[in-house]
Image (cartoon, rainbow, N blue to C red; front, top):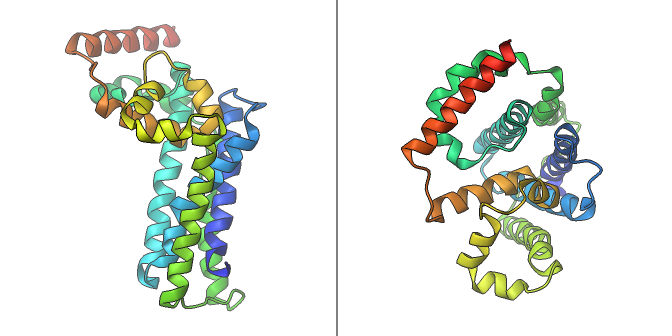
Length: 240
């Protein structure tokens, strides 16, 4: 569908960024490459595609907002992994106020490599510039076309995530027993690396956030204090 050309380009870039992220965190070569690409593209279309259903005045605002979230999560997870050797979990928000203790160290590990996670901004601005110059013809979406675009996005998402649910068996059981599925995906014994390889860092973050909300086991103040002490000791050791 021609109306979804820009979202498709951004979704393709999103796939590339996911694979580059995996390389940066030493999860490459990816043994789940096909699954990872399929899910990443589906998520990319679900993230960027709705822009084409919005009025022109909001389209660019939406794309830039989504791009900002995408860039932030990629860079935040990369920097966190570079410093701690693992992926940031939702529970980290509980002691976000202690970030000042490691700010200088975080700044020191930022490299030009992270700019690869900002390329979507250049694509959006380049596309907008080309539109103004008349190189790309913008078709005004009619009501029926918007319905088709929405249906296309739904099918893309269904196909991508359907592969995850049904590709490994027991798909219907996973859907009808959602609480158990969430518990299994977000228990403390599952492999974060395996999840990131299979579904990408964004689905890992989403699953972890859902699991954090529904988990019965919460971090106590003592847990947060011990983590803070560990961070301070690690910071001191790195400065020595």
